[in-house]
Image 1 (cartoon, one colour):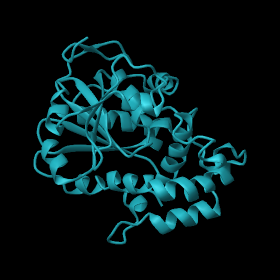
Image 2: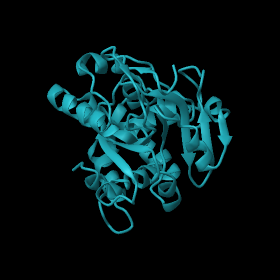
Image 3: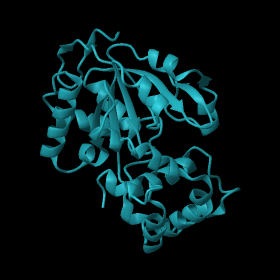
Length: 281
């Protein structure tokens, strides 16, 4: 199946996909679940994850990769590559993923013939999901971090904040990616960007979910699936590369301490609450 002969699995009609798509997401906001949505509405997954940060520039090539890999196994699939060359691999009708920052060099490459889907989730939930994921792929181990075996989930998350998040800084990265919000209201010339909330995809309000999928389809210039409920049921049951044993339930992990820790660190350099900027109180 190539980029010009994609079958929309949600309703079985032949679709011609002309657009190139990059899914730019806040880390742990449902990136790979959203990739399942794109696959089911007719786009072809390149299985490429584009990276651009202070540590590395290139792609992770997850073609033919098992669904479960340790972090070290994932790193073995990384290839150093200029951003322009990475994005050139996204042909018509295909998509790739990435936690790309909204900086001038990245924007320059994304202002030409590519549609951007900006995926967000409440950064509180992203932090919890990050902890769960880092434990599941062996980055956080019992030997190095004995707290990861604490059975009380709120206490375990508290120790993650104090002993891991404080040092590694996942919230700093999440806040940076979230600043794509500013480009929705003031995009550079030629930029096409669509914001999507993870909660609207998996929420109980099926009417809202249907409206979101239809708006997404309109943005991508394709027909919306007729049976959104069936498509999302299939998506939620799919195994993905970074799935962390079910959807995060915040109440199990969040506490007064967690909220205080979060509140003290959620502002950007101008003093703005980044979580509120992307739409979460």
